[in-house]
Length: 283
Image 1: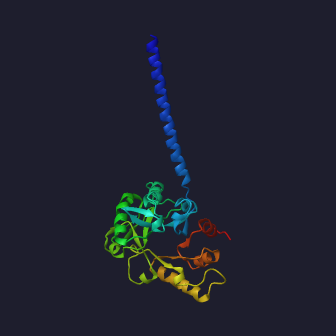
Image 2: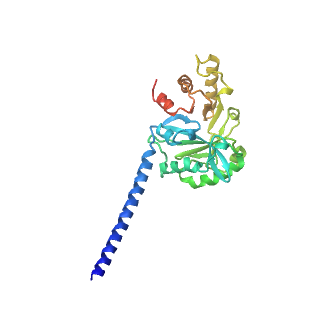
Image 3: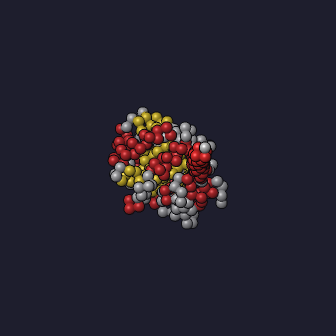
């Protein structure tokens, strides 16, 4: 009788321990999911804010989204079949994949929606190829096919806008993109690509080096001739219904102000908080 009671008692204790363990694991699971989702805060959208080399921020993607940026930039290298995010090849880290830093969290944020922003609109993910165009693109295509439900697609000259729009920069596979009938990526052109009758679905954006066109670094007044040149460049891009961006622009309020006044579509910056405050009316 004592043996039977002892056996039942041990069985009950083990059963309770098992239940407690399951409850504990569930608490950890849902707690981690809560904090993960809570950490991904998306601020009010800034339609013309572009995070240059976003991956060098303290929290890649997340800091940009918290500041309301609607365009972020990631440099990638194809290394042993994996797309790794880094500015220089010597800095690649097998843990910092394009999927882990960008595509996975963006898919979670989209979760069947057409926008991750309350105000609507797509998020531009500008992917800058640092390795050879063709093999890098072939690897990227395989990756993007897994995220189709949240990506903008392009076919037969049309654009089907979704939560995330991929634009390729750097060593871009121009010919390959032009010949594909359906894609999950478009082309970041240069000023020299204007006037060639490329479909907007192929080339929705043109980007160029600020230092190739302007000498002004934000010190003193913007030279009149350069101001007129900036206005003309923007008008030319807009006449073809394309957005325009300059890289290597000085991170100074006077420069941001001139870019804003000229209707530059994406203002390039490494200073997320500074540009966010400026665009929201800060002095």
